[in-house]
Length: 143
Image (cartoon, rainbow, N blue to C red):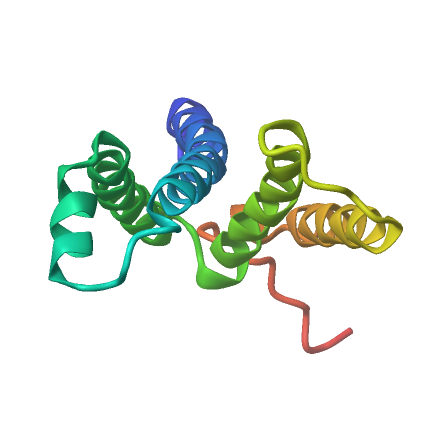
């Protein structure tokens, strides 16, 4: 793999690394907003029709499709062992958004758990999983 191609691959991975959690975060914030608006309506056909006409629900559909496209792109570029931990970053962002956007309380367990998730994602990344498309060096059997 040439240096230019390797750089391009890393750039695409970095962009996807930013896009996937952002799409998930946008989806969850929009879903919570939509759920709050629909909370007092009876769940029936009229509820579904009301939901479909809501701009926030329409945005949910767009975000879901965009997330699907981004996820398929990530899976085409990265091994699953590297891609899936990437999705865990979304959990931390959603905890932060719940505090900032919806003024929900944050307790110590959520804070520690979020930091542990970030540490785990960092460890997977440092383990070389993001370069897994390149063959790993083979150990010399004679050594």
